[in-house]
Amino acid sequence: MDCSNDIALITGAGSGIGRAIATALAGNGAVVAAADRDLAGAEQTAAAHDRMTAVFLDLTSDSSIGAARDDVVRRLGAPTILVNAAGWDRPGPFLETDEQFWRDVVDINYVGHVRVSHAFLQPMIEAGRGGKIVNVASDAGRVGSAGETVYAGAKGGLIAFTKSLARELARYQINVNCVCPGPTDTPLFQSLPEGMRAALIRAIPFRRVAQPAEIADAVLFFASDMARYVTGQVLSVSGGLTMAG
Image (cartoon, rainbow, N blue to C red; front, side, top):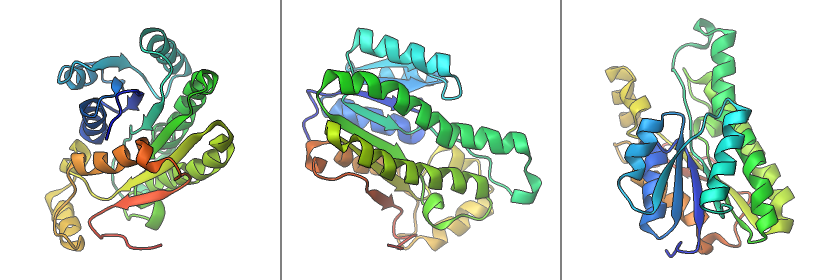
């Protein structure tokens, strides 16, 4: 895929799936802003490719998002690709969680992506080049996930946000789609108890979790011209764990 005419902003690019997406886009020719509130992680991602630059971006701060947008537009230009890949959770029983935890999960996994989309859409639309937005949600948001109830709710909201935003932005030739990973070999997955990890692997028909690069492949499709007539869609990348329509 040729992304040599694209400028991409990737949130959550400091590790895991976000890092794999940033690397894949840069490897296919895009100029990439690898954004994360973990600036050291973003710098490590960016150091792997000369077409990447690290950007500090805190999803929970309007001022941080605004500063990141202004910095990216000034240095690189208006993005043609925006990937909302940042995410966070701490699995456990819903009845053992509290309101501060709920707020943090929703802020990072839903409201933060709304903030970033709102901030970067203005320069994207003004540039008049169209573009692609890809939101990384989760199959937890499609079918639910025990121990991730608030997280599943936030990701379900992101799926609905994707579909509605796709309707609004079609007039600007901006496609908006959503990738829903199943269990993936990320720092979050490795933080789960060994028994939970083993049970998830047994439930997956392929009997393994995804590698971050396999999620990045799906994002790369939606970000490319191969998906120019695809918008408002949700693609599960879960090894067959979820097969609901």
